[in-house]
Image (cartoon, rainbow, N blue to C red; front, side):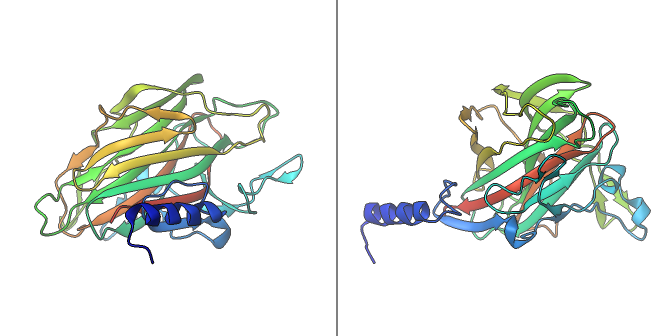
Length: 297
């Protein structure tokens, strides 16, 4: 075991690059989780809204959500695409109604407030039920974090960074990244111990500086190409520190998050979400090949 930091880092990089599952990522020193969906759901589950006494009390935004599923990316010409290097990816599908959304979530807690990095390979498509390109049928895809400080660290607001790729709106091909700083009013249930808000509502999205980007979308409605995303966030300052998508590095100096008062049972929360939204009355699909979440601690 070397005690030279430079040699230790060089060894770490060599081991990462020799690992075919991890060399596609640029993780921070500690890998918190590595999700390859050829091994199953890896902890990603349905985002169920809060309620008390009656499931029908759930807010409508959450009631539309369904579970993500494992998929071989089936299509009508050749059978299936499979994932980027295995048979399966995680598939998140909306309902076939314009404006419908779906969300999948992975729930952690953190051990230390410091830098974290969220990396993934994703692709999106509408349901291929027409013999046309359909490049404006998916309204948006994106990701979010749901974070809260520890019970004794003195900075325990709930902070929710959101980044959305607005692909299309009402048939117009928009293709730009947006973020969000406001959520909907809180709804209280029954005993008032449980509250809810739908933070993915369509209102309040703000354009990211120089956030226009044309992503690869192939020539017929069944083809897919995988896109790399990487988002850096500091749990100490609760500020974004970087965002990359494929070959683009974006300025996040003007980025901010939804910030609301902390809740008494969510200490050290470290949750991650993906979401997808359709622009037309057909299902929109977000496929996630693999995810690497890492930190520096």
